[in-house]
Image (cartoon, rainbow over all chains, first blue to last red; front, side, top):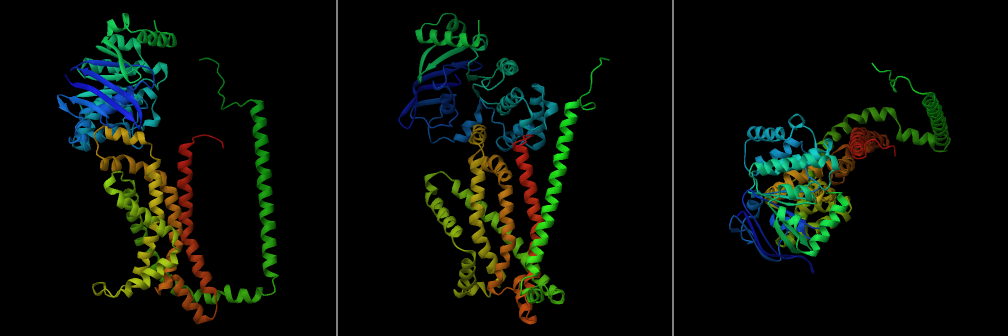
Amino acid sequence: MILNVKGLEKSFDDKAVLKGIDLEVYRGQIVALIGSSGSGKSTLLRTINLLEEISDGQIFLNDEDISDPRINQDQIRRQIGLVFQAYNLFAHLSIEENITLALRHVKGMKAAEAKTKALALLDRIGLADKSDSYPDKLSGGQQQRTAIMRAVALEPTLLLLDEVTSALDPELVGEVLELIRDLKAGGTSILMATHELSFARDVADWVVFLDGGVIIEEGPAKEFFSNPQNPRTVEFLQRLRRRAGDQ
Amino acid sequence: MPNTKSPSLEPSQIELDRRAFRHSRKRRSTLVAFISTCAFAIIGYLSLTSAPGWDRVKQSFFNFDTASSALPHILDGLLLNLRVLLYSAIGVLFFGLALALLRTLRSPIFTPIRLLVRGYVDLFRGLPLIIVLYLVGFGIPGLRLEFLGRVPAEVLGTVALILTYSAYVAEVFRAGIEAVHPSQRLAARSLGLTYAQTMRLVVLPQALRKVAPPLMNDFVSLQKDVGLISVLGAVDAVRGAQIEVAHFANFTPYVVAGLLFVLLAIPTVRLADYVTNRLAKREQAGALL
């Protein structure tokens, strides 16, 4: 088991956003988090990456309690990649430098070595010839694929994806999903918040439905989508499918 | 090959009309600008020269012989101003940036430091520079610290300039740091970069670009304020001019020194405008207004 979340709670001031989450991610698995906006998906991902302080519960990464404040948080974040909905590429750096920055300053790689690795990763997503371009010169899909590669470059134990296709034009969604499929084939363990139901059904191993800060229902992807048990799950899936024209 | 018309080679009649109209409008505004400038200059010249005391003013402020004999001495002083400017600018950049960085520290351990920095910035933004010059220039030697020896007036002046300008520049840097979107910081931290690395590698490079124009404006102000060190007795361009004024019993050397400061400022002002425009263009590419 890569990730084990136990009884996780998170409140902002007096507002409880996560109310006791139990979640497991096994090696090489993709776990999909679904739920309407405001259900706590992003907050959950951020607490796992230690970008938010939790209010109660525990988070274990490879059996190590990373919610213990005595651990080195920077050390843990190196092991967990996070990709954002709005890409968040560094605006003052070329896409190659976006990837080499952490390789050099976090992993301590030599400049030449980092460059070789960055170019190989950009080649994988067909952007090697654009390595000197700045993020604002690229399409949303190209930026998001670069952002994923920036996280993947550090060879994280766990990759967190926070609605990585939500800000993209519909015709650019496919190329990003294709890359995620690739990563799974390569054995990367992924926890992703997503609205892409058909993608979750095809690629995810496990699906978790979050609503109002609690897990309403979870199960293996095929079963979850073909035979949802909870009426709230049924209602959510119908609403999303109607809107997306899915199925 | 399909018979397609290239729009750039063969504009339509409507476009030609529009161009002709724009062209005539432009010529008319140039003409109006030219005429009004000439009229303004003539009125200004006439009202100045017709003033009853004009001949005496011309004699005591715009005397060519006095100007040319005072110039070498004033230029010598200007070299001192330039040296003070160089050291002040470097000192202000470092000290101002340090103050700004201290103010962004969030941890409660640093609360006293943050408060101290805030007090410092409030104090020196409010204090007139000339008072800081007096306090530093006469106060520090007054302490009779043996190990300092005799500190030259220009060094004390430089210290006073750094103290004052660092307060302004710290605020400029702080605004720049806060203008970098928090998501950039989040992305850096999520990659495992430490707080210090995030500041140095991600936030500051973006902040510096944003604050280049206001920073250059502060540099222009500093450029003329270096003339104030003369109140401490440093023989700079202003003090040099003062000596010549006493010597010739004529005010022309002040005008000469003033012109030299303006000449010094013009390149920096132009550069500041250029940098500002370039940044503005990048941020609203292509828009007309």
